[in-house]
Image (tube, rainbow, N blue to C red; front, side, top):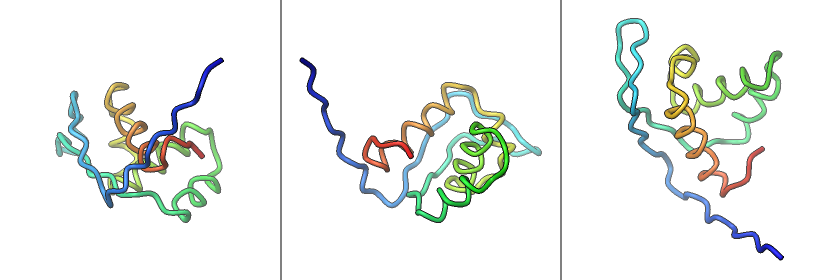
Length: 96
């Protein structure tokens, strides 16, 4: 029998994520991204986007980090996972 451990949500208003592999986009190097807490309207905007689920995720992360989707697309997978993990932490371990 397994017991599920509930994660406590990250209650901060924003989180700073230091990137292991900073991308350079349009001449700007991104060493750190600041992610704000998601709002319902962010999820709705991403859900309405016509396209692949991965594109919806990129749009959502870009909005939450206040950067162009191009920046998110250029992230190393390790750094992209850091953003996904932080989003999950804001949601209390529950993905939408």
